[in-house]
Image: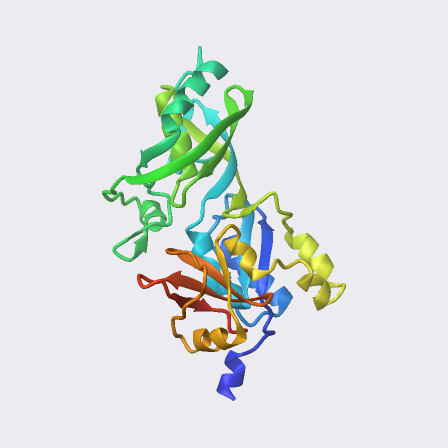
Length: 305
């Protein structure tokens, strides 16, 4: 009886691109989606905090085995920066720490400063972040008035584009590596301009291969649920879309048998290194790792939930 209790829910697999609303934590959003889909297993691909909205990929069933790959993927954001004020949290929720004049700053000067923040840069993790120190989140310590020493981190800003300028505010789009703190980026840009800054709006527009894809709000999901569970399932993306762009190998039924036993196999014309998608016919079978001897070893088997 206990085992049946742990297996509650449907064995549904797929990826939902949720348009997470402001004010809702990623975990609460995950639990609501899981209930709507009556899913047995569900997970998200890295928190998007309550003060940000936008894309939160929700992995259902076998897709949870790929969530780490999306966690490590590049991210895309649109955010608005307000010059002249620094805050404790780097956004509008924190108390204002300092106000400075913005006289003389124009779009050309902003664009000139942005060149310093493209490519590989060093960032100091802010105290109001989910990074852990001795088992406790930094934002929890910050709320207690505790500040700890942090080490700078190297991140990659692939693209940083100036959009609308309505001084003292302006909009930016960024394509960045995992671990980039957008609020810290805005704060540092403000310091480079000599007046300070903070984020007034933050929206994630893409994760890894998911750029330009439709997202679904909670309202849309709840309305769709009224049409039946199959209508909800129609919103799911195939799980292998999380690995779009990866090389793929196709194996026979005999070879697939050994892969399913956890054994490495020889696959003609397989890549010579790295990770691959493995298919048997049209079925996505596993994530594979090319070994030093050229064989393909299963790394994550898609066994069905």
